[in-house]
Length: 125
Length: 383
Ligand SMILES: [Zn+2]
Image (cartoon, rainbow over all chains, first blue to last red; front, side):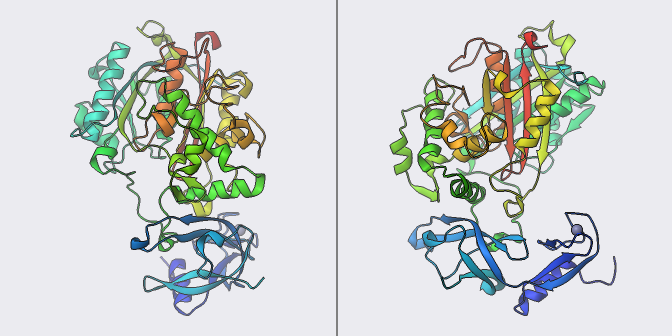
């Protein structure tokens, strides 16, 4: 291929440093998630990396019901970041049924199963 | 100017096998039995089949496996995997292949033993890397998030979703092929165990065994065959994403596009359909598809399906076999939308036969609202 770092690697290395890095397209200005080698909007390959602001809003959400002995109910949601991209995540500091569409959240790098992962914290109302 | 493929192929035979529970039978056995039933229905044999169209969860190359099992050497094979919509999708590719002379007898087939073999929905996919850490339940979490967003934007209610399940059960009650036929009320749906908010267990399709098959030939040949031909007037596919996190708009599916293109090909409008068979993996599907396929405006799907409007005796007969919610759901239900639509046109529905059906819609959904494929089926009167 080339001597560039593969995009998934850049993203994961970013997470390991506590950074949420997003690709931005030089062709159409759109942010791109998940990481890839071209812009899915305009097909430009002119992509560069920017750190996300971390500001986000819950776009939609569900409570996955699970028996207490298996860990109990948990949240799965879609967050829309201020940059315009959406990703799956979970709100960590709100009871799952209390996670609401439209809620303002902060995306941070937390840990899931020993690996860094983007998780969400509710912003103070 | 009609599309050149409009009405050029016809369903000449159909069959089902192993619906409900088929303990001990493999998915291939079920596929083969459905295929034999469909060929027998058409007055043909396996030796006549030279085009094979197959998707199954058993193998990454199911069309090859199916050909091997059936002992046939087709000259045209299509194993395009678009999930549960695959079989509706094959109506389009089979029609094109038949019209181009690439095959003469197309067999579309499917079988699954997921209920008795594993008891849950089987998927062959790798976990998506940017979703898996959050442990979404595949596929229900995706549909639950679409439902939640629809409720948020349009005020759709759990009661309206429940009425989709109640309507499906109403049709299933009359269908001896249906797995669940006991009465179901809105209150029972609402009181059933919550699985992924806002979807409860009664908002979810069944997990059954089962298989189905279709035999397609060129239209002129179908006229001289035993069954009433069911013509493929239009078919179109659309897809906007694979993973739910990439769905551009959680309240609008690509069915808006597939439907519009299928209607244009067939030269029909939604108000002309006598029956509508859609892939109801979850109650929200039917709401979305009523909107996206043009039966009501965006946001009005909840009200459209409520209060028995799509149940027996309602304003529009939808999922007249009982659907994936109450008839059968072996994992990739799409083929049953075609089978039920065709049977309605042929006046041989196993359950409620709607009077005077000439035009039927069959709509397949695949993945997590990912693939949408719409087909327009018609009787000879619609040619
Ligand atoms: Zn771009």
